[in-house]
Image 1 (cartoon, helix red, strand yellow):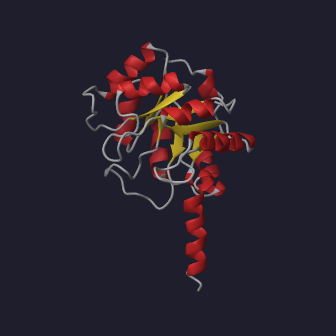
Image 2 (cartoon, rainbow, N blue to C red):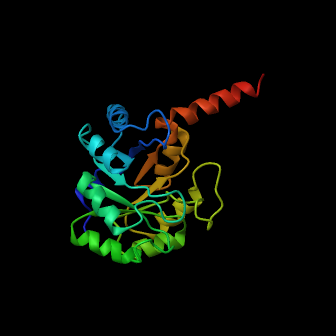
Length: 228
C-alpha cells in the first residue's frame, strides 16, 4: 500500500480522539464508549481511536468518521494489538485502520513486525505503527507502515517520559519520513495539539484530556486541594 489511502489523506491537519476506558471504570461499556465517540464526532473529531472488539464494533455503528482500532492484551511488553490474529480481529470488527505495536520487542506470536504488516497489507488492511523511539519508527517505515505514530514514546524505556508530548521525537520523525506521522501521547491542551500540527504532524491524537473524566477530575481536585 504505497499510495496514500483516502481514509488517511482525510486526516491531514485534523484531530483524532481516543475514546477508551480502563477495566473497572464506570464508562467501561461499549454503548457508553460509542456515545462518547459520537459526541466527539459532533465536536469535530476527524477519526476515533478505540480499543477492544466490542468497542470498535459499537463505535463503528455510531460514527461516520474513520475508526482506528486496537486490541490491548495485558499491560506490559507488547500489548497493543500484539499479534497478527489480534490485528485481523480488529479489522473484522470494523476498524478502518488497525493500530499495532511497532516497537522492536519480541511479539507473542513470534512474527516480526514486518511480517505482520505484509500479511495485513495482503488483506488490504491499513496499519498505524505505534512507536516508542526513532529506531522503532525507522523499522516501521522500512516495513511499509501506512502511518507512523509517537504513541509509545516514554513507555518502552528507550526515551525519557516527558511531562507532556514528546515533541522532539515528533520533529525527528517528520524530518526523516515521507509517510504520515501522527502525534500521540500526553496531549493535555489545545495549544499542545496545535503545536504538533505546526511541527508537521499529519494529525494529532488526544485521549485523556477529552474522554477520561476520572483523570480530568483528578487534575481539578488536586489543584483545589493544593490551595486548601
